[in-house]
Image (cartoon, rainbow, N blue to C red; front, side):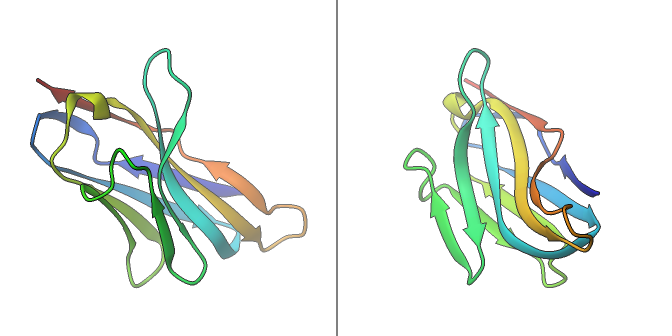
Amino acid sequence: QVQLVESGGGLVQAGGSLRLSCIASGSIFDINSMGWYRQAPGKQRESVATWRRGGMTNYADSVKGRFTISRDNAKTTVYLQMNSLKPEDTAVYYCAANVVGIRAGTGGDYWGQGTQVTVSS
């Protein structure tokens, strides 16, 4: 199968920065798209930043200019650089990917376990 593991979350003061990482592994033949999503308590999960084949990126209006999504040269790790953090950014952040699997029927959407980001006032 496919595994996505996030790391880099933590507690930071407003105005600070964090860098989240997502390592993809497993039976991946190719990746169609990847993204970061977040969910605050009592709120629906929302898209934060996404990447798709060709290098196109998309950001939520609330994070535009503050967050940056990127991939390393090996294409095994996706990052979310978060600057100028605000208390309203507090949430569990999830990495997700739509992949083409090596085995037929193993492709589709996969989600990481999430990493907590807490921004204090």
